[in-house]
Length: 159
Image (cartoon, rainbow, N blue to C red; front, side, top):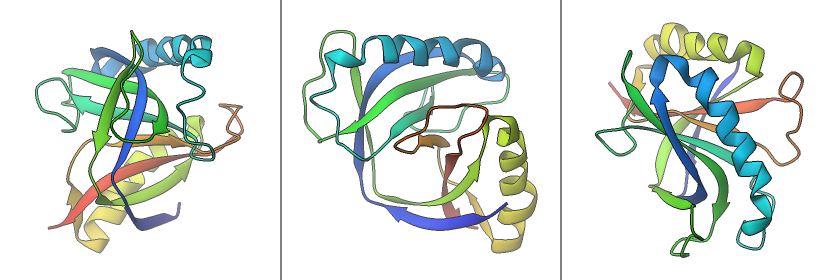
């Protein structure tokens, strides 16, 4: 797997927030995306074109901190928008500060392999450690969870 170090400017995501057990994300996150897509007409005029969709993660007790193993996590499913917009009823915005990320492409079926690659190969070899919550980026045109690539964005800092 290829890992790229990128610096992403600060950005804002407008979406619908959910929360649940961090070890049961596959049970509660896909229905959240279904809800977001079913209501996408409400926000389509606010979304920045060409930016794809984002799944932002955060610990429940500390904004943009990594999920705790066997804990609760928050997840915002949505799209990038201009900062400062007022979200429609039932929607939220999260602001992500500018930071350095390690981006790793994967498919839903290789998601675990990408996580393992970061923690077991990239991080020890390159001397980086996780500096916040991991985010998912679904590029423009992503449609098929079995075939299309998504990117895991690991915020990092030097050890």
